[in-house]
Length: 202
View (cartoon, rainbow, N blue to C red):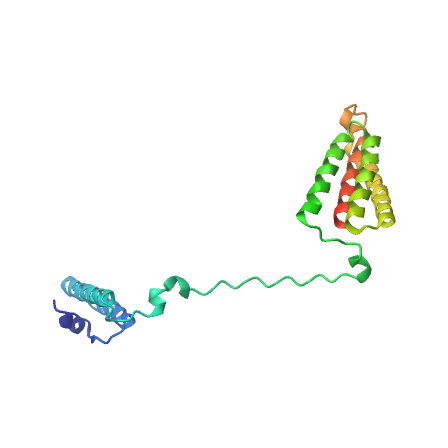
């Protein structure tokens, strides 16, 4: 089948676009769905046109639309999620809240985790070391020693109060386990509060 006959079979001309060729093929196949011989002739004409267009494209005689050549670039970019609105804080609160780097969080976390575990063996010593670490980490950030002491004392009282309350709920009545001592649980929870205050306050 010659190229001209292929175009005539589909009712097209050589200047027809790729979309027109596809539409003509689909329409004719649907019209002649019951005539197998006619459908085969339409398919053969369609294939012949595509092969001819491919050859011309490889020879550089026809220009391929960018939407076909670079189909992967034509897809619409997914809409990005809206940027979160900045959280506005009162000025007095902004002076206390810190946005630490990863390193500023990890070193204190390692120190206070070790102290929290150690508090199950020697709660008083763990608390004393925790207070020293909290003052050191807070003072290291801002170089305000007395402010560091006040924030550490506040963290100590809050942590110890939470620890005593938590110990009453966590320890079953009459338990004799070493880890189930109220002072050990209170010291461990205080170390956690001191870590939060030394990492996220200034």
